[in-house]
Length: 117
Image 1 (cartoon, rainbow, N blue to C red):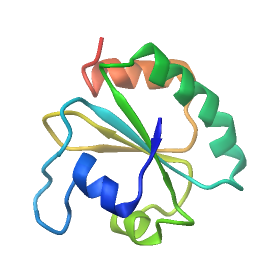
Image 2: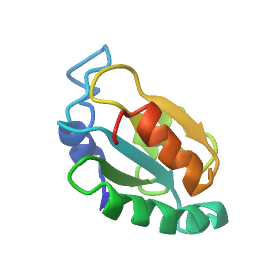
Image 3: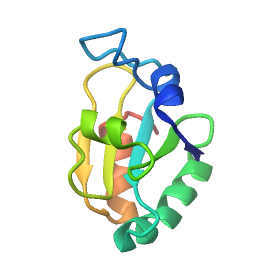
């Protein structure tokens, strides 16, 4: 898992300054976890995301965005509660998941939304 800044988000996920329409910059699907260090549910979700990043290594990227440090990025995506996950398929539109879903639900979303087997 990699922490993203606004600059690295633009190169790895979406360059919102260069594009008005959604255009994914990555080569494989990804999950972006908007979190904060003080957030209890975020801390509960972190181990599941870590396990999934190992299980799907090479097939899926998992990124983290600290909402306290990247306020502009969080505002751009309308993040009002955390944790919020942004599920991003290679083709198609991203989907928001609010809250801390169980690992099984995340695996189902990885399979169905991101089409990663």
